[in-house]
Length: 183
Image (cartoon, rainbow, N blue to C red; front, side, top):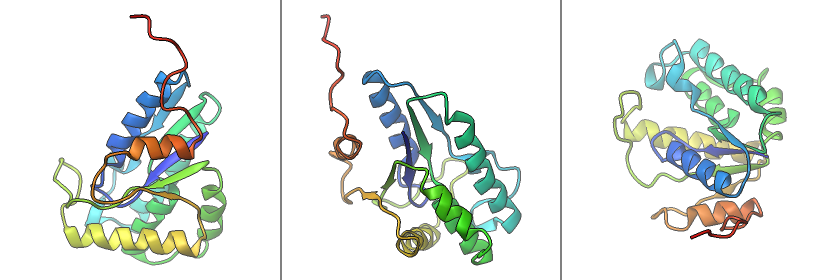
Protein backbone atom coordinates (compact mmCIF):
# COMPACT_ATOMS: atom_id res chain seq x y z
CA UNK A 1 0.00 0.00 0.00
CA UNK A 2 1.19 3.51 -0.76
CA UNK A 3 -0.22 6.48 1.09
CA UNK A 4 0.64 10.16 0.65
CA UNK A 5 0.01 13.09 2.93
CA UNK A 6 -0.76 16.10 0.76
CA UNK A 7 -1.18 19.77 1.47
CA UNK A 8 0.71 23.00 1.64
CA UNK A 9 3.86 23.48 3.69
CA UNK A 10 3.76 23.89 7.45
CA UNK A 11 0.61 21.86 8.12
CA UNK A 12 2.18 18.85 9.85
CA UNK A 13 2.51 16.32 7.03
CA UNK A 14 5.97 15.21 8.16
CA UNK A 15 4.83 14.68 11.74
CA UNK A 16 1.86 12.63 10.49
CA UNK A 17 4.15 10.55 8.27
CA UNK A 18 6.29 9.51 11.21
CA UNK A 19 3.25 8.93 13.43
CA UNK A 20 1.57 6.74 10.82
CA UNK A 21 4.78 4.80 10.13
CA UNK A 22 5.13 4.04 13.86
CA UNK A 23 1.47 2.99 14.02
CA UNK A 24 1.84 0.70 11.00
CA UNK A 25 4.98 -0.88 12.51
CA UNK A 26 2.98 -1.63 15.67
CA UNK A 27 0.46 -3.37 13.40
CA UNK A 28 3.29 -5.67 12.18
CA UNK A 29 3.56 -4.09 8.73
CA UNK A 30 6.92 -3.36 7.15
CA UNK A 31 7.00 0.34 6.34
CA UNK A 32 9.30 3.00 4.99
CA UNK A 33 9.01 6.73 4.35
CA UNK A 34 9.50 8.86 1.29
CA UNK A 35 10.64 12.00 3.06
CA UNK A 36 9.96 15.44 1.64
CA UNK A 37 12.41 15.72 -1.25
CA UNK A 38 12.29 19.53 -1.52
CA UNK A 39 14.53 19.77 1.54
CA UNK A 40 17.36 18.09 -0.37
CA UNK A 41 16.86 20.02 -3.61
CA UNK A 42 20.12 21.65 -4.77
CA UNK A 43 18.16 24.48 -6.39
CA UNK A 44 16.09 27.32 -4.88
CA UNK A 45 12.77 26.36 -3.28
CA UNK A 46 9.85 28.17 -1.63
CA UNK A 47 8.95 31.50 -3.27
CA UNK A 48 12.37 31.60 -4.98
CA UNK A 49 11.85 28.29 -6.76
CA UNK A 50 12.26 27.78 -10.48
CA UNK A 51 10.82 25.47 -13.09
CA UNK A 52 14.07 23.48 -12.98
CA UNK A 53 13.89 23.12 -9.20
CA UNK A 54 10.28 21.95 -9.29
CA UNK A 55 11.09 19.47 -12.07
CA UNK A 56 13.91 18.09 -9.92
CA UNK A 57 11.58 17.79 -6.91
CA UNK A 58 8.73 16.16 -8.83
CA UNK A 59 10.94 13.62 -10.59
CA UNK A 60 12.97 12.85 -7.47
CA UNK A 61 9.70 12.19 -5.61
CA UNK A 62 8.71 9.64 -8.25
CA UNK A 63 12.16 8.03 -8.22
CA UNK A 64 12.13 7.62 -4.45
CA UNK A 65 8.66 6.09 -4.55
CA UNK A 66 9.85 3.61 -7.19
CA UNK A 67 12.92 2.75 -5.07
CA UNK A 68 10.73 1.64 -2.17
CA UNK A 69 7.82 0.14 -4.12
CA UNK A 70 8.67 -3.54 -3.81
CA UNK A 71 10.38 -3.75 -0.45
CA UNK A 72 7.63 -2.91 2.05
CA UNK A 73 4.02 -3.60 2.99
CA UNK A 74 3.45 0.15 3.25
CA UNK A 75 5.10 3.27 1.89
CA UNK A 76 4.20 6.56 3.56
CA UNK A 77 4.94 9.61 1.40
CA UNK A 78 5.51 13.12 2.69
CA UNK A 79 3.77 14.73 -0.30
CA UNK A 80 2.54 13.37 -3.62
CA UNK A 81 3.31 14.52 -7.13
CA UNK A 82 0.14 16.65 -7.19
CA UNK A 83 1.37 18.95 -4.44
CA UNK A 84 4.82 19.09 -6.01
CA UNK A 85 3.08 20.11 -9.22
CA UNK A 86 1.15 22.84 -7.38
CA UNK A 87 4.44 24.50 -6.42
CA UNK A 88 5.55 24.24 -10.06
CA UNK A 89 2.33 25.84 -11.29
CA UNK A 90 2.70 28.63 -8.74
CA UNK A 91 6.26 29.34 -9.87
CA UNK A 92 6.12 28.79 -13.63
CA UNK A 93 2.54 28.13 -14.75
CA UNK A 94 0.79 25.01 -15.97
CA UNK A 95 2.80 22.35 -17.78
CA UNK A 96 0.28 20.58 -20.04
CA UNK A 97 2.93 18.09 -21.20
CA UNK A 98 3.38 16.86 -17.59
CA UNK A 99 -0.27 16.62 -16.63
CA UNK A 100 -1.00 13.22 -18.24
CA UNK A 101 1.95 11.75 -16.33
CA UNK A 102 0.83 13.40 -13.07
CA UNK A 103 -2.71 12.08 -13.53
CA UNK A 104 -1.32 8.61 -14.22
CA UNK A 105 1.11 8.66 -11.27
CA UNK A 106 -1.61 9.82 -8.88
CA UNK A 107 -3.42 6.53 -9.51
CA UNK A 108 -0.47 4.72 -7.89
CA UNK A 109 -1.46 5.94 -4.41
CA UNK A 110 -3.87 3.81 -2.42
CA UNK A 111 -4.84 6.74 -0.23
CA UNK A 112 -4.31 10.49 -0.34
CA UNK A 113 -4.74 12.35 2.93
CA UNK A 114 -5.23 16.12 2.65
CA UNK A 115 -3.91 17.90 5.72
CA UNK A 116 -5.65 21.23 6.40
CA UNK A 117 -4.06 24.51 7.37
CA UNK A 118 -4.67 24.99 11.07
CA UNK A 119 -1.81 27.40 11.87
CA UNK A 120 0.64 29.65 10.08
CA UNK A 121 3.93 28.02 9.07
CA UNK A 122 6.81 28.30 11.52
CA UNK A 123 10.40 28.67 10.43
CA UNK A 124 12.43 25.47 10.65
CA UNK A 125 15.49 26.47 8.64
CA UNK A 126 13.86 25.61 5.29
CA UNK A 127 10.12 26.30 5.34
CA UNK A 128 8.75 29.59 3.99
CA UNK A 129 6.78 31.44 6.66
CA UNK A 130 4.56 33.59 4.43
CA UNK A 131 0.91 32.95 5.29
CA UNK A 132 -0.12 34.23 1.84
CA UNK A 133 2.23 31.78 0.11
CA UNK A 134 0.99 28.93 2.32
CA UNK A 135 -2.62 29.83 1.45
CA UNK A 136 -1.90 30.20 -2.28
CA UNK A 137 -0.37 26.73 -2.44
CA UNK A 138 -3.22 25.20 -0.43
CA UNK A 139 -5.78 26.68 -2.85
CA UNK A 140 -3.78 25.47 -5.85
CA UNK A 141 -3.64 21.95 -4.43
CA UNK A 142 -7.42 22.00 -3.91
CA UNK A 143 -7.91 23.21 -7.48
CA UNK A 144 -5.69 20.48 -8.93
CA UNK A 145 -7.36 17.78 -6.82
CA UNK A 146 -10.73 18.87 -8.22
CA UNK A 147 -9.53 19.21 -11.82
CA UNK A 148 -7.79 15.83 -11.77
CA UNK A 149 -10.86 14.33 -10.05
CA UNK A 150 -8.76 12.72 -7.33
CA UNK A 151 -10.30 10.95 -4.37
CA UNK A 152 -8.81 11.83 -1.00
CA UNK A 153 -9.47 11.82 2.71
CA UNK A 154 -9.70 15.39 3.96
CA UNK A 155 -8.79 15.66 7.60
CA UNK A 156 -11.02 18.01 9.62
CA UNK A 157 -9.59 21.40 10.56
CA UNK A 158 -9.39 22.93 14.00
CA UNK A 159 -7.74 20.11 15.90
CA UNK A 160 -5.57 17.08 15.20
CA UNK A 161 -7.55 14.93 17.63
CA UNK A 162 -8.72 11.73 15.97
CA UNK A 163 -6.74 12.14 12.74
CA UNK A 164 -4.83 8.85 13.06
CA UNK A 165 -8.04 6.93 13.74
CA UNK A 166 -9.61 8.42 10.58
CA UNK A 167 -6.58 7.42 8.52
CA UNK A 168 -6.52 3.86 9.89
CA UNK A 169 -10.25 3.53 9.23
CA UNK A 170 -9.76 4.75 5.63
CA UNK A 171 -7.02 2.12 5.22
CA UNK A 172 -9.31 -0.49 6.81
CA UNK A 173 -6.71 -1.24 9.49
CA UNK A 174 -7.27 -1.91 13.20
CA UNK A 175 -6.48 0.70 15.85
CA UNK A 176 -4.60 -1.82 18.00
CA UNK A 177 -1.77 -4.26 17.26
CA UNK A 178 -2.78 -7.89 16.69
CA UNK A 179 -0.43 -9.27 19.33
CA UNK A 180 -1.29 -9.60 22.98
CA UNK A 181 0.34 -7.46 25.64
CA UNK A 182 2.96 -9.48 27.48
CA UNK A 183 2.98 -7.36 30.61
